[in-house]
Image 1 (tube, rainbow, N blue to C red):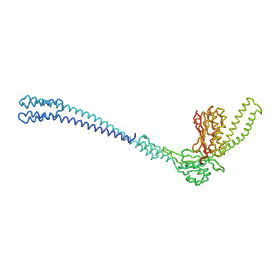
Image 2: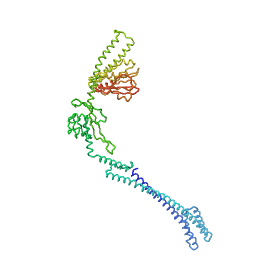
Image 3: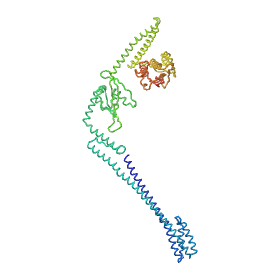
Length: 578
């Protein structure tokens, strides 16, 4: 509970109890006043009237006005009747007094009137005693209630007196001692208060201050300079170019490799805003273009071709944001960026050698494969000779393996084109129908062997801007995969539809589908879904992606495991403004 709340609660409760004490005391004083008033007013008047009537009765013999005074007091008494039985006694006095006025000499009537007045006086005296007892009880009750309320007020006031000063004074005392320790350069001293009141907030701020003072005290200038020199030496000895900038895009450091490839001197780079340098330096402009990119999504790693080390070299650019959490703080703070240019030239050279090797081997394989196919065709010709059943089965197996080897060789040649960047795309206005017909006919035999029907739906007659040969290859590959992975006696749907200035091709199979964790990997080279027993090199979809993107289109997959898959790709219409 916060200190302010404690004080407000304690003082407020004490105030309420004092108010209750005053209210109860006033109530009982009023009640006592009321009971006392009843005693002094009504009963006292009755006794006064009775006394006056007795005196008037004694003077009737010698005073003519005595009867009038008696009558006057009797009338007042008749109006002042308050006690039980007093009405009957007063009426008796009235009756006997009327008789007395007619027979003044009758002494018995005088005696009866005295008795009647005495009875009225007796009734009021008893009432006075009774009301006095009630007033005593009220007084006793008032004493008890007021005493209890007063004791409760005293107890709360005592608790506040004992606890409240210590709750305020003790933390202040501890804080004072900690300040003295800090003044004596003992920055390890910490203040520990409960974290839910004002002193908890004060302790947190004080401890943060102590940590920052400790950090400052330990950061000796010599140590800082030595650490700075160590980091600068480490950066300068890196074999990859590296540039560091602060949060205001001012260059903090650049190693020798970075200066070498940029053609700049250190004084031309260090301390200058990097966007100002980029105005006159093409390489720096290329490097920093992503720094001012406001897009939230992270871009792919970019490869740069730079002339360095007396040859064309390849570098992979990576920009790293530097965020730190200041001492005693909780939120991170952006303080700058580091630009890495990782030299990947040796890997690029190895990759190029691998691509050349694959291209050479693939070309060399084509000639013997063609010879093998020619030999198979000659053996299938009965003019050469008739083969028995076992020989025909063996020949069919060789033919299937040769066809598969030829397809793999073709895919390797395509992938070498992709990797070498030598894809030749001939974009022309092309009809859609011939491309689909070619792809479907190329897979017709395989589909018929499994009793699979290919359903074609073309909903537009627009031409597309495409390389018909490569587009037909992609569509043939997608339909071939659909036939390979669909169940027998099923249907494959080949559809096109126009969306704005693009035509979307779709191939839907009725196979098992692809699990969600593999959807983003099917277009990677050599990837095959784990557990599949179907043949394939894992290159077809990768080549398809490269061919479609080279034509300015996109390719993607939708699949539901257990239901089937749909491959889509888009190409621009021939009338789209380029």
